[in-house]
Length: 505
Image (cartoon, rainbow, N blue to C red):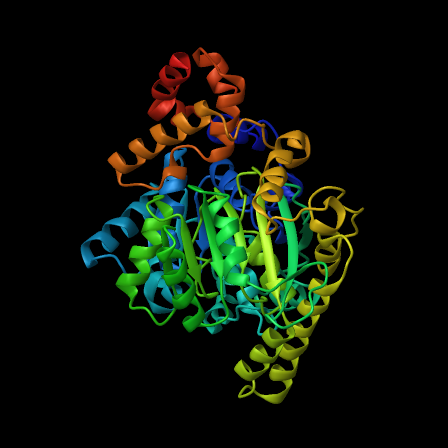
């Protein structure tokens, strides 16, 4: 099958996003490739489509065990044959999957880098690997913002299996890209950078000030109150609130819960069972808001996050790009609101003071760079994209500087900002029916089906697909199959159910 045929006939999408086709063509030709694409830019398709087109098995190195089951379930939901190998499996289940892999039962096999060290690598020895995809590849570099030593041991994979290597990341600077190429022993790789401009993300930033500080435009005195107003204006929608410390996570989650928000805390100090419960509640829409440290994020593959709030400034521009990129991955309008202060910079300096001097200095400069970005009164999308080597025109309507957005203002201002999203539907890549009763009816139906299947709601259809249904109102199979995201497997599993709901209005 051609890449276009796989895209349409398996995934139900009519066109590729920027950068996807170039990467796919390279790996199909047997060439190594580094893909730097923003979170939400469709990185997974760049190895899932070749997995179907190449035959054999594609190994996907994925950083978190918690994410693997969701990745496999999502792949299976569109008809791809996928599995994972990690420490959560019993001996018998692991052996059965390895035997299936050697028989050619799977197109995709997910494994963590630590698992490849611990035995999954040996288990793959009898398999025919057509492609090795390394997700979150910036983790291989100590100059990346999420260095993981186990990634360093992936260097021998290319020579061992003789397969092309595809390294994928959302946040690599040119320095980090060079480190990725060296550490993975890539040979003359094609480098593809997707556009970092996502018009559906509405970026804004506010300086945090003490109660006695004299306010200036873009300053807030009551950060907690501003966050509460933001969340109440988005009642029933999914969002993440990032905080610098565990203590701040706990106090913010308690404050929101006491005000009637379905919010849960998430940080590394919680035991694994508590973290898993919070993550599952969020994925299944039983909790609307997760209040978290940066420990939360990589394990989430939820496309309908409608807002990301930074209660405290991120530790670097790269981290900021990664974290805001978790909003609006389905293409629907989403708010990204940053609260920052110089005190946040000082806090990061304390956190990194015990590192080797060169590394500590590097982290200090990254925090200062983030502060300068927040302070700059210029197009925020333009400034963010420039960090990754992309030149953009000002966004015109997708940030507070260009579009005059003020999502933490008084309630009428918030309502006006939200109402304007519909008028910018073409720019935001989403129809204007987000508030329609039909869309809410489809969301309710999706939640019922998801609960019955013990699965996250977005595994059925994401918000962008439901929005397209609510806008187009298809009345027969042909019209329904033309909705982006309704592939053959999704039609078989859910098409008639949603078509009946659409016919009823």
